[in-house]
Length: 194
Ligand code: FES
Image 1 (tube, rainbow, N blue to C red):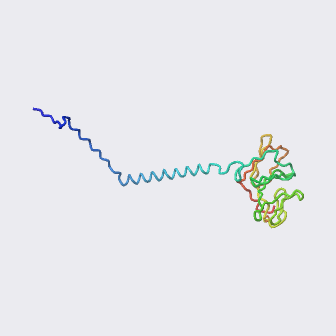
Image 2: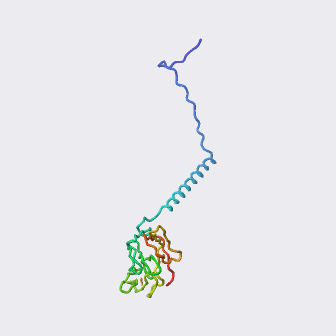
């Protein structure tokens, strides 16, 4: 004769739950996890570094970045050079040579030479070094001529010409200037009095 089990309240007893056993990772698995996490961290850091280097560090128009100077501001050949204090440079238009962009800091001890129209040259107020319109050393304690910034002249015919590796003035060859792009993050050292 079948018997049935009932509780005091008359309900069937709860079924026993299966026991799930969680195995701890082995030592080898644990080392794999650590190794994988380390590689992921390294890759993440390398990726962040690449993005950081790829982004421009200076905005256009701030020192260290690129300045775009419109044609109206670019001096005519032989005229007084244009000073751009925020970029710490001068733009000279040297007759028979072309556009030259000069770093406006004296190569002696770092003062700021001024253009002196009556003498037609740059003169440093600190110790009297003097430089020509194209930045070439004339006299004084400065050891070398003025440095230059890498620049590109854009012409109205759509062409453009970059400063060469020697940092020579950019010749106009009868073309009309539309604008001048000056990279104040790329200084070309003169390295001599020439
Ligand atoms: S800093 Fe210009 S001559 Fe000395």
